[in-house]
Amino acid sequence: MTNPSARTKAAPLPPWSREQIRDARKAPLAPLIAKRGLVLVELPADNFAVTAFPGLIVKDSYWRWPERDQAGNTIDFFVQVLGLSFHDAMKTITAS
Image (cartoon, rainbow, N blue to C red):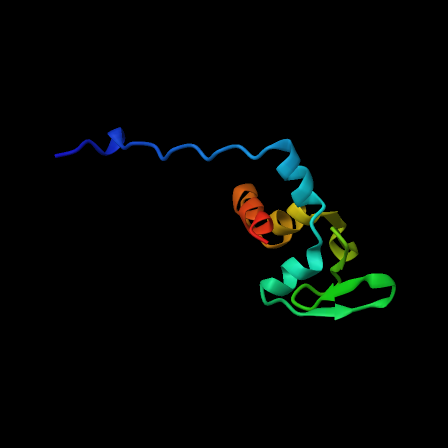
């Protein structure tokens, strides 16, 4: 019989480099959002509304959600809005 408290831990995830994180923060949001199947509506001045999240606006690698007093970069969108872990957000963004 095995001891349940003696489980082996999963190998630690490799750290992301500063350069990879910087690049992910600056990744254009609209194509990444569209790739996930979310509908974008084009607005003036190269802004986009994300219909699944009323009031949320994206432009380039930034988003803002005034009704919730939230804003951020591409990584923040995947973590704060979509609820992904940092690691999963990075995998999704860098897979593009």
